[in-house]
Image (cartoon, rainbow, N blue to C red; front, side, top):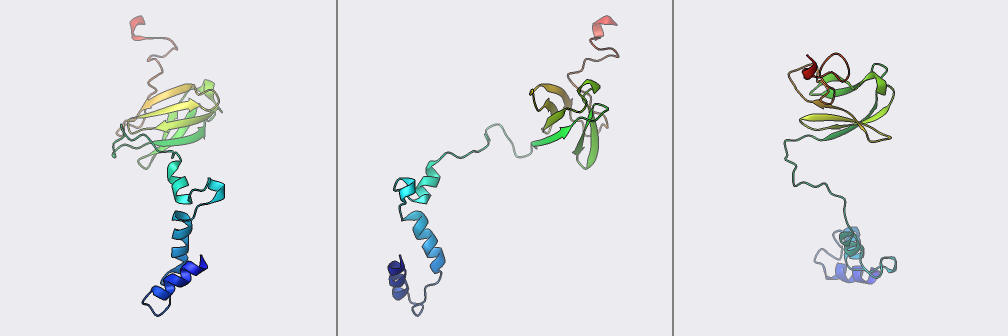
Length: 151
């Protein structure tokens, strides 16, 4: 390696000085020199051969926002979310108080899931003009299980 660097610096027209010997060394080791630990492949070949984790961008447009937030439901059965600079309190239900949750936030919907069981606890439609985002899973009415047919 040192011999190669000396030959390159002797052949250069900058008075015997090599412009960037460290950069040349890194490029040589990464791209030309095989390693025993990598089955006689260069680090460059090894890196580009392995699978990379990448998002599936087929259904994603650039104007969509995706976030994940880890939180805990408070004693009143609500979680806190900051959206467009405003703090929102999303009602999940008091029976889920103190549970650890994951919020999946899209441009149109917030899904609140239990961390341990992966159960979907609530879904909220994002309405930027409204202060309250109701739970889409919760049936309408005052009493649990009550629907519009009982009126």
